[in-house]
Image 1 (cartoon, rainbow, N blue to C red):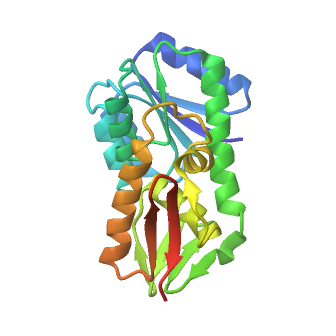
Image 2: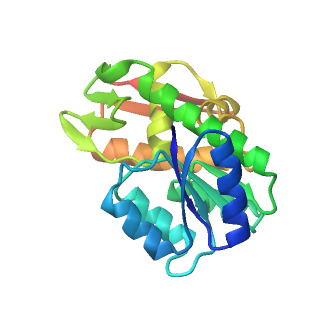
Length: 230
């Protein structure tokens, strides 16, 4: 039974989300304060399989909580917000959220998105088992969701890891932005595809800074390709 942490200060919305998620077979814990949610999470970072996170919260807002969670974990995060601006969505993805749902929302859509996020996480973690993927001096462990370069672990945000995993499965193959959105976001993000560019730019910087033997190339007007330089 997947374990979901719902962080939402609007009691009616929290109750509605909890009702639909429990009906879909999830175990739900609801907390109304950002600081209380952070304390609960930090007491046991592996207690939850997904976090449904409101943007506007007392104590610590959703952005701050997302940053703090990402310091410890790559647990999937679905952000809820009343803001419907692509800049806010891009900022949310840059913080490490996995999906974005604008209020008011259809609770059935929220359940569908939760299913899709959990399905992606399971697929990525079990694609090759504990052996993971090895290219040059990098090793991706898809079960533990870790990247090591020349034996040293390199921290990655959720979407950075997911993107690198997709590239590693298709070394030398050009992947379009639309295909990357479909694989990493499951086609659920309808905003500006520049979010791909933001995440890839940060991923490139991290790979270069640790001397990784792979590089992500831009193929003009087409997409991106992972090249093994070893």
